Length: 145
Ligand SMILES: [Zn+2]
Image 1 (cartoon, protein in one colour):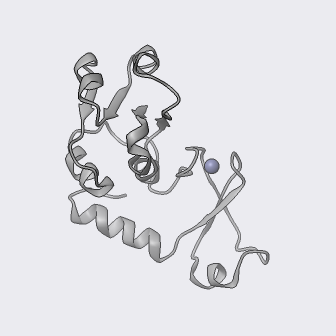
Image 2 (spheres, rainbow, N blue to C red; image 1 turned 135 degrees about the horizontal axis):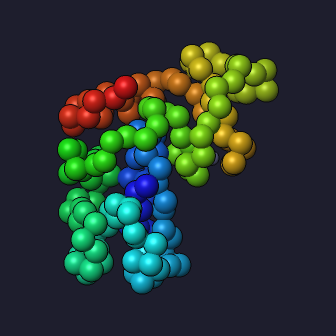
């Protein structure tokens, strides 16, 4: 499990798309809350003070989520789920489902597979945006399975 602090929302979504269980901590929670739940987890933060209080944390320097991923290459634990198996919004496991008639035409046309997240009642599909994300990851040195 990876914990991501409130400054890294986009990174949290990318990590879920790669296949990591990620808990995003909103800015309604303070550092002591993060420290209280940090045991056996990896904490990603841009907050130097928080990083100094936690041995199991990585301090990210970049503001760009893609450069943050590049900073994390070779520093992350083994991936827990497959590529695009988790909902990027809530981290729930998505189900593969049939192309449905109530989805917009442009989805049915470009989708090769449809995924459904029960937890947040949202549909996803494999299409050009997934391919682009995969290519971006490969460009910065990730192996995507
Ligand atoms: Zn979801």
